Image (cartoon, rainbow, N blue to C red; front, side, top):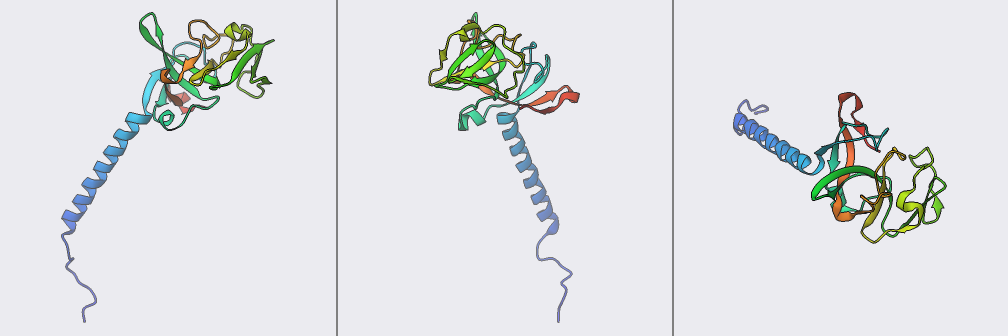
Length: 186
């Protein structure tokens, strides 16, 4: 009777090396995929998104998710606008979706006639800009605003106005630097 076979049926050394190489290749492919679609980065310039994002924060952008679904209200996005022949990147928060009506009256934001309560803007808006009259968003437009609501160039201004879907680069999902501020963006 033979209960224990001291000799393995296959070459364990070759088997372990092969599995190790395959594991490394899978990790490399996954890392490349992750970097290509989730780790585009940009730097915050200015104070228009204070306290959510600070000047010189480095943020990571998810450029894949908006290929799968539409941007949602209150998402923080990176978009690009033509500024005298040069593309300039901006980071703002979406408050108006396609088909919405946006109005700022007496320092309060109204979307589709309803006062927006509980959003990130604690103070009253001093300058409603273009939104002092009702703005009806087209099927491919978004109304964006900076979290530092009284110190932000956004959809209220003539230079930026509404953001079209093809101008959006992606959703900001992580503050990656400085080290002390690393966190998910909400």
